[in-house]
Length: 201
Image (cartoon, rainbow, N blue to C red):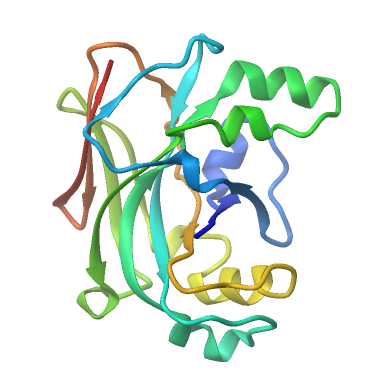
């Protein structure tokens, strides 16, 4: 199982980090050790600025490569909610030096995952996602605002990386990212339904 993450897939998020809006999907990987299914996330000692990024997550249900966009919908059957935790201070240091920034994205437990739902439950072009921290909404977005659709993402990524059953694709985060701190309680919602809960320790 591998975790594929799409970056800068909401225009407003790209702008808030002062990044260019991409003309094709940007993706990076996290190892399986990044996955976190528990209720608690412990802040790592190497960063002073761990940012939350709430994302819709696709679960791959069929192996494939060089998938055509028109057939991409056949390769996932569930959608969930996850968080792409980012050590923003480490990422910035790496960017300034022109270095890869895996250590800012791929560290242990940096990919919490919540509940999954059958995709038939949704209008794929109108799925609302929301992150509340201690009851206050910090991020809110909708799949209709994705720069690159689910099918486009799958088709694009599969040109470079073969997809296997159980792979997860984090599809990008809307604007509103920010740092978490000890004591925060994170709650993620899909179309208003609670799908993820996490305590920051």
